[in-house]
View 1 (tube, one colour):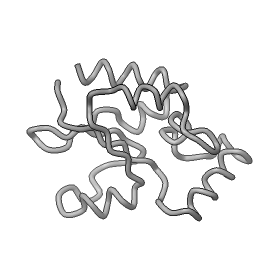
View 2 (cartoon, one colour; view 1 turned 120 degrees about the horizontal axis):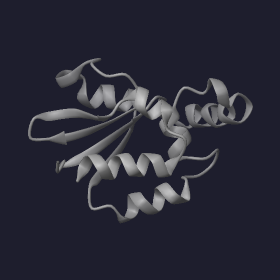
View 3 (spheres, one colour; view 1 turned 90 degrees about the vertical axis):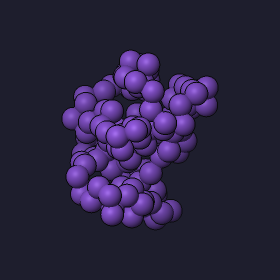
Amino acid sequence: MNPSKLIFVYNANSGARNAILDSMHKVFSPSTYECSLCDITFGVVSENKTWKKFRQESEVQMDFLHKDEFQKEYASKFGHKFTFPIVLMEGERGLEVLISSDELNQLQGPEELIQLVRERTI
């Protein structure tokens, strides 16, 4: 499978205020934080180093969107078809699920996410 690009959609809204609230939520109540993709790819303040290295070295184009950005950009084509967080791949047949919300919620760290991305895009 050779996607033209991967689209990572966080289960969080965009904007500085939301970023601050999300960071506080991760610190004070991590067990109730609803974006496993955020947890895996970002710490409280910055991008996870293992994930960042993989992302920068990957030959696959990757886009990262918050759910409000995704819904705005893809609303006319896909509406509310997906649950978040999610990793989608854009290919000849449009958008397809690469890694579902349920799968993301089971991952324990960036290494597991990297392994899944590699397995499913080769």
